[in-house]
Length: 267
Image 1: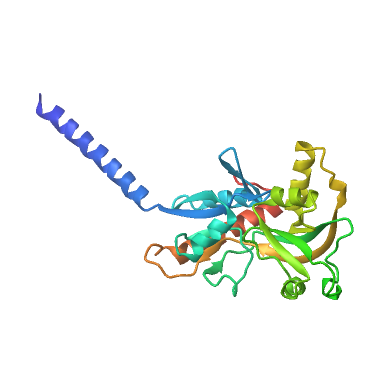
Image 2 (image 1 turned 90 degrees about the horizontal axis):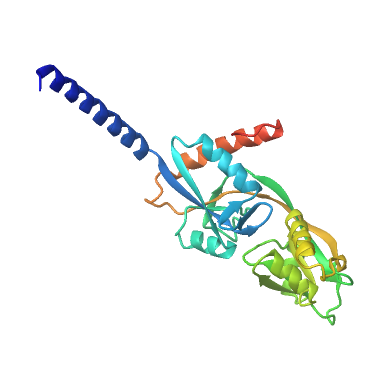
């Protein structure tokens, strides 16, 4: 083999090696980040047939595409209560989509910019109401109220009513389980985001027409809250990228939200 041929082979080998090294170096700079996501909160976040869907899921995925050169973001569906426990135990970096509860969940801080505002309402069976609940006679039977497990969505009046025994709070797995218990009169009222509940009622109407949904009445607005990505407060060597990621994710979310207002969706 001639000298010139050997030289060409050598140069090609060096070029290929350099390209692979550069690619490997670039890939090594991309930080993997996992965000736990409520798997049963339609239309915002929910899992179906092994895939994660929802308004907030779509929003964060669009933001993630803007950060792809620096961060590889995995959205991992989990039951809500398990996700909250994972952050409390320091076993996870982030969770979506909590409301802000700085005193009740001191282990979560900071929060992302708001993803959206939600209206939390009470739906009750006919003849039951949470309006003026503190004025109910002490001799009256307590009103049984259903919540999704791990949700903190009672206002001050309802928390006081719970202390006084005027309501009893029952945590159930998800929207469907609460609606089914209401239909069987096992709970009197169900408190959750309005849109999420209406979608749950509509799904049950189609899957089980025998259930009388006209008995469920929107009783009152409990509160309005914004949903966020919540991050682990604890300083951990596992997440040295924490504040860089939070700032860049907020910037990306702002871009996506502004484009949504203008009717533009990122591809």
